[in-house]
Amino acid sequence: MNKVKPFRKLGAQEALFVELTEKSNGAVQLAVFFRTCRSLGVEELLKGMEYLHNLHPMLRSRVEKNHHAYWFCDVAFKAIPFEIKHDALPLNYQEEFKRLGSKVLELDKYAYRFTVYVNEHEEVKWIAFMVSHAAMDGRSLLLLVRDLDRYLRGGAEDESSASIMKKSVVDYVSSIKHLNKRQLAVGDGNDISPKWPVEQAVNASLRKGCSMYRVLPKKLFSLLYLLSKHENVQVTSIYNAIAIIAAQSLPGFRSKAELMLPINAQCLCKHQIERDVIGECTIALTISLSSNETSLDLLSLARLIQRKFYLQVRRGNFFKPPIVPDYSLVDIEHLAKDSSTAKGYFPSGICVSNVGDIGEYTGPLEFFDFGVVMTVQTHGEHPIMLVTCTIDGEGVFVFGYCEPLVSKESALKYVEKYMKILREFSESNDLYIS
Image (cartoon, rainbow, N blue to C red):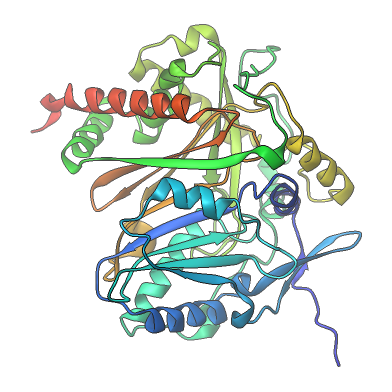
């Protein structure tokens, strides 16, 4: 019997995500919940899921580790765990996110699992994917929903059309010549980044990944969009500024703040990473803000963050050792182990990711009309993570946090403060409607 050959070695960021998942109680597992809007039976859905599995190599992936970690893409669909949930409607997103996030993926056997929520007539109403962030990012999950929708409409594509990351995102980005030279971080000179305290320090085995979401109605999102155009400031920068201002509601708020901003590496690696690739191609940069800067008004802070963001992108400050192409797996394991230990502080600041308009990834969908995406936060890196997107003209805001590092009461205060600022800011600027 011929031994199966690995697809390729894991990149440093992929290896770190695998170790975080294994050592920090499911950390960085990526969840997407999508709601159906047409009649759909379980059998039909499962056929669609098998089609997706056979179409995309990363859905067939698993990890083997020796001195290095390697991807193998040989997992059969029958090996993928799934469950069909009855009597679970209407969907309690908060409870289901916590429940599914606490089930750690066995990455040496498979890279995802899924849950199907059915009504009393055995019709599918919600689908939840839980995937390894090392294998796929949020953009990839949206493409999977697109492909599933196409299959259900009878428009499935040939399996040879699927695209895969032939190299890791660290390898792609590190190969860009003008990003090779390491620069100083954008911040306050020699200031040390603030470390916001946790409410209760525990190790990873006692942490629970939690999430909740809110929706900004179409009218208010339209007002916000018109305002951003009038003021020449991106909506993303407004979201980032509100994230900092709303953080004043957190018990551990410090006036010196830090933002982590994930971005799609396809924007940097023009023509190298295919548009429809299924894989992990997200990178992140960090912006530091002084006490004077966090006290600015919303628009001034948004403009400042926008300037710092583009300066940081030009400087190429995306990875810190050991997240480098020639990484040591031992160093990655030590880094992940450190994240799992009890600490009295959050190593990083608030994380904000704006996915943008979902329709730009999926095109028109016939079987699905709403969805939310969030990663499990049991690594304890951020006080809050926020993932934003637009679906059919509505703004969707998904908040992630980790109990008991942040209590549910504190997270709820933050969410309500964030949405209050957002609504009031949008409503106060209706003069921009022509």
